[in-house]
Length: 278
Image (cartoon, rainbow, N blue to C red):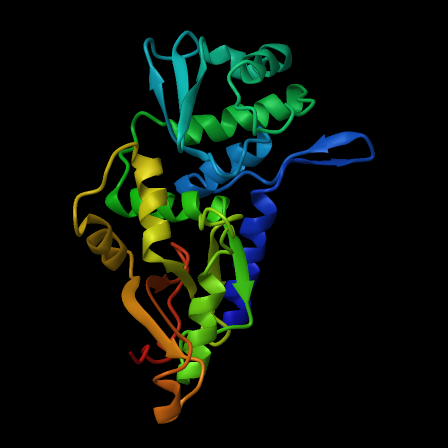
């Protein structure tokens, strides 16, 4: 996959995580994801329900009786789950609107004006996500962590983690969030790079670890995320650069952070464009 194609995939992801659009007074939901696209299903439901992207849907399950009398639970990152009891509430616009209205967070958007056609699409995606016969693989869970991070993050383009020390310095700075002048705490959404040369996504290790804790609902064992990301085909590297090259730059502005870099789950890896020099 070329860098341009990778940027197109990221653009699609950004479009999917936005609230459902209203055209000519009619609510329009994004196209339903593929049956095996667990991360896409979570992003779709987050968008369809106008949920805060900082607390996206991360998974789901069916409970109780089989069929319409059973219950559905949709888990969210860093927030209480959404419960639909019985599952048939997902098929009824008024019931679905009522259930959502009284379970959503203050930071979530207003419940969309859902109609019968929307409920059919919602039930279809929920059914795929909560399929009791399908086991979640390690790769799917890790892809879900990446999706959880991306759903609440902002992309930065036009930079690369490959190349000169000055380019790496710019890339490391591009991942840095603004800080509050008084408290020193980060402001705004976390950031990730879309590498200008390879189209790879570049995410700070600390930011992805925080998303992982929210996604699984517990702390992560040391080295667990490194192993999972390696199995997904991502590399953890030290992004290190100086604003000025050469001997003079050693005493000038310097930036360093650890990052994961790789392609979206399911994308074909392009030829490696090189390695980050530290």
